[in-house]
Length: 233
Length: 233
Image (tube, rainbow over all chains, first blue to last red; front, side):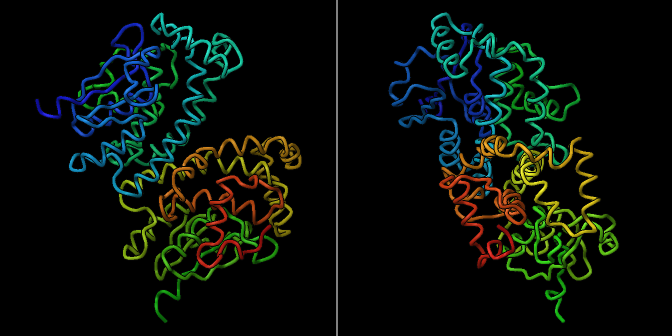
């Protein structure tokens, strides 16, 4: 067995094992495809702490590559870039790497919380029975409200989300992808956030004709429709 | 006379000619210093449309480099990178260039409006007499309120600004500059926004000990204290 066939990605799943919704795991699935690397994904649920205990922590994505294992999406992207330098670049050199970290920080700190409040009950509804209690209590502690209350005004909140992603829209008016003429990790980061919502919610985040929606469409089609063909809305 | 000595930057000034406060002009002054290029700056005011009519539009920065002239800070940065490729890089290659555009879009669409509402009356108070009526009426039209009303609650608004720049803070926890180990245009973009406020307002945007304040300090010291030595608070 060659080492390629040993690559495994622990990937957050809902009650249906094929419904994969983690924004962080989506970044890595796109990154693996970008590098032309095959990984077997393993459906993982919040309650499966044992399955990834070897990684020394309790969250996915976790990538196992032969004898190596890496967790945290940013660290995995860096690992892939360093380990497979002859494959298409995720960052495009030191400057691209450094500035893409800002995109990662922006998406994590601004975009993820904004999307969470728009789809949080939809996430809950797609979780495995064993994950629901954990998910509800941990998230309600963060929000200080019931998940239903958090999501109740989403129709009035969605314009603020569309305004929040104006930096993506402005950038896309000048170039087809955040990384330039072709997509790279700077694109997969915010795309993963949209794909998270798409995997578990029928709620429309983007208006038709929005350049961000058109960019998302191009990424849904990338790599033979990897993201488009995944269970979602 | 060699062509170097002909480089001229039209630079927004207050009533005091040396008080230079445009965030966009600051980006370019830092970019010129980064490339080791000397430019004579010309104090320009909103009412001096005639002085830059040659550029075909009415805003600064405008850079004149021999027979060439360029306006718009992003276009000037691109011009400098292309025209002086052997000087230190502003973008660090195609990927750095593309992703830095996202930083530019984020700073322009998110950071500039947030800072504007915290210091808008301070700007007004530093303007040349001839610029004040234009500035007040054009900005009050945008805000739909008097400038005094816009700025009245700045003490209660400043925590939201500090939260807005969390992506910078998160990035700086991992690396000393947005561009990595050394500063580049990705840094000068948001730094210019802070320097805009510093030039015209005693209001404290950043808390002491904030990694963003420490990063700003490093950039104030860069190029022999170019930004720190400029009139400001």
